[in-house]
Length: 146
Image 1 (cartoon, rainbow, N blue to C red):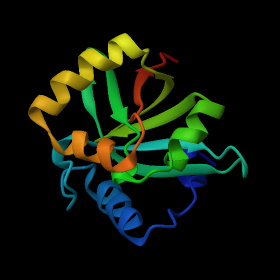
Image 2: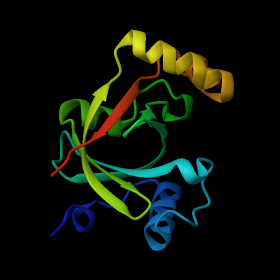
Image 3: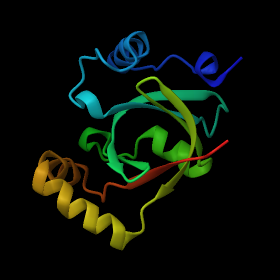
C-alpha cells in the first residue's frame, strides 16, 4: 500500500471534498480559495501513526514550497503542523507530482522577510494572525531526491 492509499479520510467534510476534487483532476479543478497554489500535504499522525492528508495553499520558494500554519485564524495550531514538527518527513502532491519532502519551520529572520512580503500582497494573513493571537508559523517543504 502506498502513501496515497494509506491516507486517512480527512474528518472535515469540506477538506475531504477538496481532496477528492484534487485527486480526480490532478489539482486542475478544485473549488478552493487557494486556486492553483493548492497542494495536498501528507503527514504522519503524531498520536495515531496514520497518514493524514490536508489541502493547503502554498507559496513557491525556489525548488521548495512554503505553507502557513494559520488554521484560518484559530488560536490553536493546526494538527498537520503538530504532526510535521513531531515527524518532519512529509509527502506533497502538487498537481500530478507526488514526492517526499522534509518540513522545517522558518527561523524568525527568514519568516519575517517572507511575512512582510506576504501580508503586503495578502492582508488576510495579518488578520488571521491577529485573530489567532499567535505568530503563524511558516514551514518550508524541501523535496527529497530519492
